[in-house]
Length: 258
Image: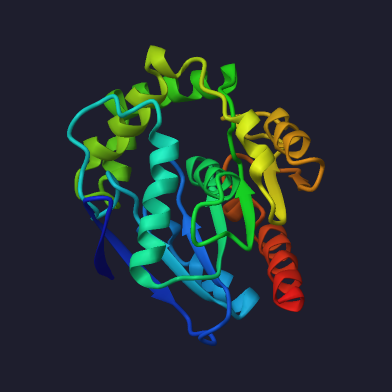
């Protein structure tokens, strides 16, 4: 684990596996309460499935990266996450990224591709993305607040974040802020030019398949939808083989076309 500065913040990052100098790099973007460490051994499986080098990092406010001290965060915080990603990749010399995002990380990956931020994404796997707010997500976030303040969620998350309040409240207070109720980035998705695979569990408590349909519609139908049975908000845990298979197909197509 090392540190790099991006948009004025110190971010932790790490590499998994080796790859050819000119080969694509798979970049992991964690969920809203996640971090570099919370992926556990999944990046290793990503490398083994694709043969590509994997870059893993914690966004501002998470893991061992600099904490956020003021909440709620900006209503543009998903866009700022995409700008942070672009700065991170530039600082580390990554020129051919394949973005693999989960939940908030999936939304950030889609926005990075939609706005053509350099370096251009070769492809995106968006796992449980959200491009507008749904009642299901708001209710689940409210339940998470109770679990954090009255249950054991804080203790569980504290193992993965140096400043656990930064991670939790930076996510929870921001999404539940009145300024976020009309949050919707559907119209921006038309700018996506790269292949996109959308993965979601049928039992996802934070969103419905309407999210995937919205992305497909606004990308001109180019996005592939993978809807998984017996699966909740974390497909890489509940249906790991299916997720790795989808990523492997996408990566193989990109390497062949290159």
